[in-house]
Image 1: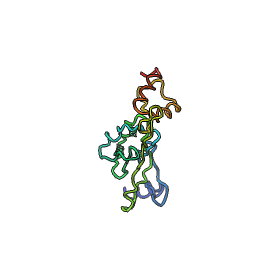
Image 2: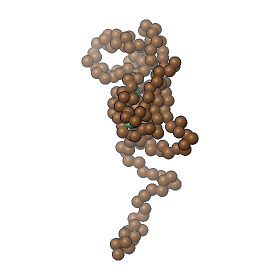
Image 3: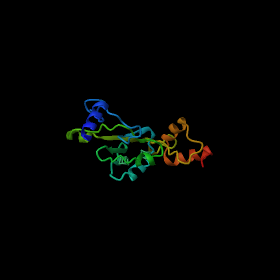
Length: 167
Ligand code: SF4
Ligand code: SF4
């Protein structure tokens, strides 16, 4: 009898599952999906690489600069990279559309390079990365971030000391 009752209830309520990929699928607001990377905000601190247990994130030195690589296939969606990133350069999206053909395996990655530039103050070769905002008070303005981006570590320190209000 229970079977008949359940059958009748289900006929009235309609399906509880979605027909993806033949129809739209629902995604929870806080779903932890595909990782996205914003090169302009990256300081090159490599904290994300350190905390990524499955080794999905790797930095390599190349002739052009510091290369960031993130393999979607290896990611376990733990969210630690986002948690420890000081600038929100790496964030998890709600995108879960990661199914792919085997031959597309090598395209399932983010590859971006923080380029070398000459320091705008002393001319030394340096990485054009975003400055680390941790402990900087008052916070960097957008203009200061762009100024700091093209300074070497020594000239950044000097500029911060001249700024005067850093804690
Ligand atoms: S979400 Fe976790 S597993 Fe995925 S890249 Fe970030 S730290 Fe690595
Ligand atoms: S700024 Fe964020 S994305 Fe860049 S290396 Fe550091 S933790 Fe990783």
